[in-house]
Image 1 (cartoon, rainbow, N blue to C red):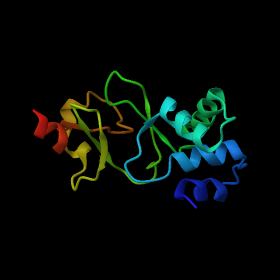
Image 2: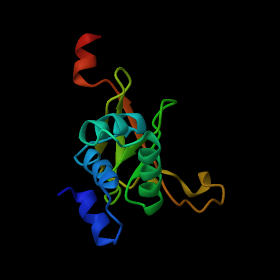
Image 3: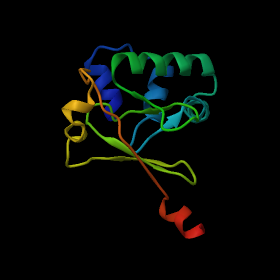
Length: 139
C-alpha cells in the first residue's frame, strides 16, 4: 500500500475506488505530475474516472495537506505527495524534470533580518534550476 494511501486511511479519509486510484498514481519518490497526467494514468487503472473527479480529489488532498501543489515555472501546477518531509526542488531547464532535494542548511537563515521588511516568514520555497544529465549531454 502506498505511503499516501496509508496516511489517508489513518486520517479517516473515505477511500473510494476513484480516490484510491488517484492516491496510487501519486505514489513514489520524485512524483510531480500535472492534473492531466494524474488523470491519464488514473484512466489506465479505472477507465470510468472523470477529469472532474481527479481535479476534485487533488484539491482535497492539497487542502488536507497530504499533497503539495508545486509551481516551478509558468507551466501547469504539479502535485507532490512528499508533503511531510521538508524539501526543495531541482528543475531541469531543458525537459522540465523535477527532483526533490534535501539541503543541509535552513534557507531562511540566508535571509538577513533587515531583508525581511517586518514579515513573519511562514514558508520558504527554493527552486534550483539546471540541466539534467540527458539534457546536458544533448546541449
